Image (cartoon, rainbow, N blue to C red; front, side, top):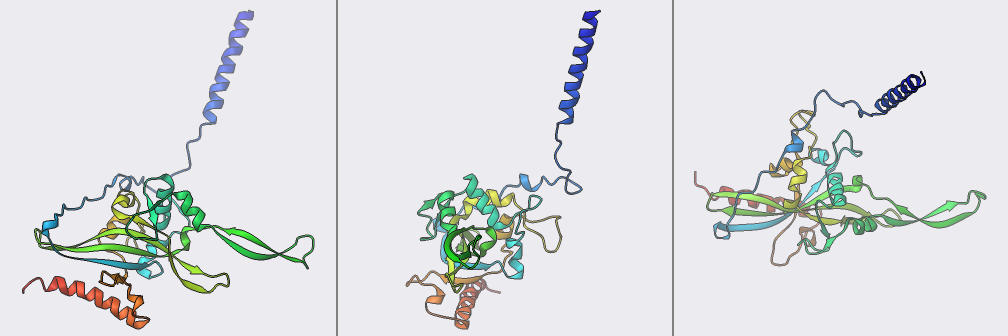
Length: 284
């Protein structure tokens, strides 16, 4: 009789443990949508067409600025906070740098010469700021202190692109290939006065294509359906920009010899020269 009671007690304990373990299994949050989006995660960038030096009969290097505050470029800037697997362009780059998937290079040179670690980058971006506060125990008394100002992806308002334009005689095609991207933020002094743009770091674009091909940009015309990846956006040139430098014998930017409207006209002139060169290659 005692053996039977013992077996019954053990069976009840085993069943109770199994039910408790099943109750503690977390199945995760419900799906935020009506279908699973897996196509983008499987995307791979389209490889470049092989290019021989002997086939390049003309080339020009161009530097551009992409202002994220322009309406056409706003999908690069938003969302400010990541949501449902959707991140801004700069947030994608920062996350990839943190994971070690891509490499950041010093903004002192756009030739990708000096790699910097994610920690070194964050230590540079988290700036110290001097503020004046009131003492909690005596509000009439003030004191100066230094606080660390955190860096956010939304602080980036512009991107710089370094690209090469080449004419391939083998395919009779004028082609552009982006070499690097540089996030730029506005620099202010302690009094809040604007001092100019501050380039932060360069990344090598061909190294980033695998990451960009797996992240979508918001589609202004078709919502969440059939979104393009960031790699598609760059390859299809679906952004607005203006030229701030083209290769020249003095190695100077347009703002070094033109200001205001004259600088804009000079940038438009450089843009038009690329278009006219391609048109003049053919006879109609």
